[in-house]
Image (cartoon, rainbow, N blue to C red; front, side, top):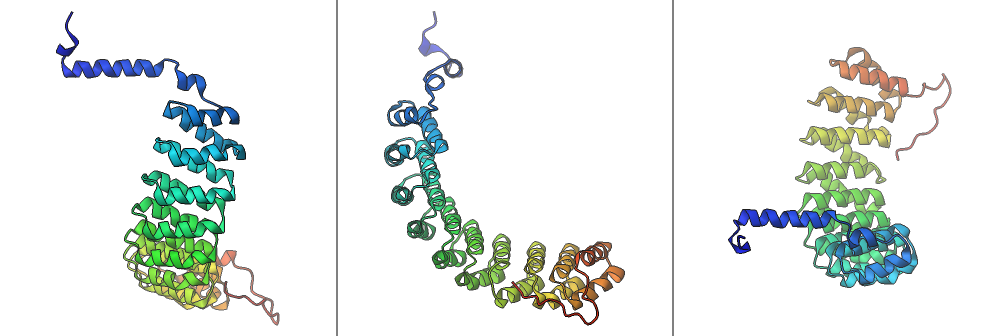
Length: 336
């Protein structure tokens, strides 16, 4: 019989792989002992030797949402050697929705060695919607080394819905070196709709080097109140180098129904080099409404150079409410 040490390396590797696959296919502890009940899962998360069993237990406890699992989930988040056991424990704590989970999740966000765990801790803190989560999330947004964690912190601050988070998000929007983080910060400021987010959003919409970030800032300006937001959207529509950013600016002005954007939309229909931007401005003009918009759309429906614009104008006119009868005053319409 050939001694084992004399087998060729490739044959040894194949033999080892075959043995591993055979063991994986056989029924074993993971298949036989995966828990379904809360009490069983608590014990399994505490004591199971196999990491896969502890992962299953943490996932199941999160799905069950039973507060009785809180202590064992906190312990696993703090001490389990398995990265994904800790990830799933953080996720489960967020699903439990208990305010007292802010402290252990904040500690994991600040101190866990693995970015995946810190990212899930940020997500879970957002789910808790506790005002106490704002400080640790703001700190992670400002200082975590991992892009994915900073993105998660920005999104979680948006989910929290606290206007006090606007300064931290504005700082990230203007200063973070990663465009993913800046875009997430812009999105979150749009969710907050806080006046404090207006100036950072205006600056990012006009000046950020990344089209993704400018687009996110434009969308956020669509919901932040105030005429300066409309003025910036008109400026972006007329000047941005990327056609997609200009298109989104036109669409956003339409969603705002901003009457003071009518002239800017007409200018875009007349002169933008991209037909899709002209079409978006035409549709937006119908949503904005008013006599001037109606007159412009009637002209473009009959005379626009491109069929796409003529079709958009016809559709926009069809969707506009009929003009008031002679002598009847139209209802006042305010820019939102």
